[in-house]
Image 1 (cartoon, rainbow, N blue to C red):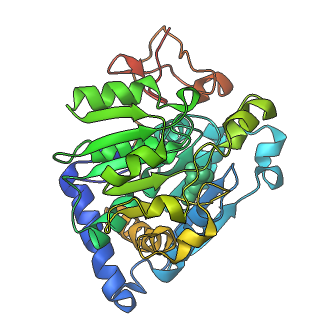
Image 2: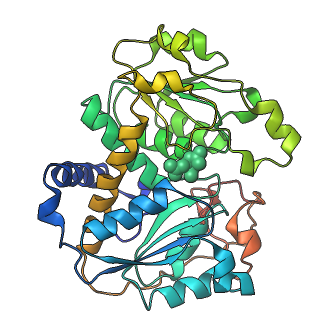
Amino acid sequence: MELRHLVDLGDIETGKIMDILTTAGAIMKNPGYYSDSCHAKVMATLFYEPSTRTRMSFEAAMLRLGGSVIGFNDPQNSSVSKGESLKDTITMVGNYADIIAMRHYSEGAAKAASIFSRVPVINAGDGGHLHPTQTLTDIFTLTQTKGRLDDLTIGLCGDLKYGRTVHSLIKTMSRFKNNSFVLISTPELSVPDYIKTFMDEHGCEYRQADSLEAEIGGLDVLYMTRIQRERFKSEEEYERQKGVFILDGEKMKKAKKDMAVLHPLPRVDEITYDVDDDPRALYFRQSEYGLYARMSLILHILENGEKRLDARPQQNTEKCCGNLKCITHSEAYLPHLEEDGNCAYCESRLL
Ligand code: NCD
């Protein structure tokens, strides 16, 4: 399968995902062998939203493959601040770069970029929607540490509503055999409906829970997340949600001896610092695994060679996306697209 863009891991066959993980493992064992693999290639990192790990790991990945990096991490310093549309920025950047890694605050932005881009686009996070390269990082971490991606009871805890890493991880782990999910959150921050529908359609067992302490003993993996302050309508709403679920040394005593604690980072207060020294705390290793996962992804995408991609013909629908955070509401020229009955950009309901 030819890998063009990475907008959603759901667009990629499981076999290809496994190939990416295998290559990541090979790179990790012998990074020197790959140090010139992207000689003379240029990656553009377009970060419309703050990032430390994702942007730096993409940049480090490209540099360690022998390529170069251009881009911005503060849209205020680019023509975006003059009112340039996403379409124009993407079209123009495609003249300078061979591949684009983009993070945007609007849901569906990566899909929108992929429609117009003549070079591959990697979704480095689109609002509260998806974060597929974090999921590559997470599943690479699981293959390296637990040795499998199936037969796992996975607890996800914290902000399951706005946490894009959670959505991508559930969608991906639903594809492997016998995984079940324990979704630990307040009722206000439970997973969006389209994720529940996805689990139902894939016959995946899940249940919602409200106590980390009560659930921790049954988990093989605990995926902790930050409450996504920047996505709340008001500071008061955020204040009501923060600090509800905290993983500490006491709770770790109740967990299985081989439970893996993952966190996409940054952490705020949801894991106390005493947990860091527990061998089950994998989150800092996880950020290192992310480097190899991204190096591998770049190699797999660029192996398709120099050819420019064709803009894909699209079927416009009369309906509008019901999600006000969807990119179609801020970039009015975008065609309205339907996929499986929902908005093709952000998976929300069309009205
Ligand atoms: C996550 C993100 O940006 O969604 N961070 C990351 O990419 N490692 C998680 C978060 O910000 O909480």
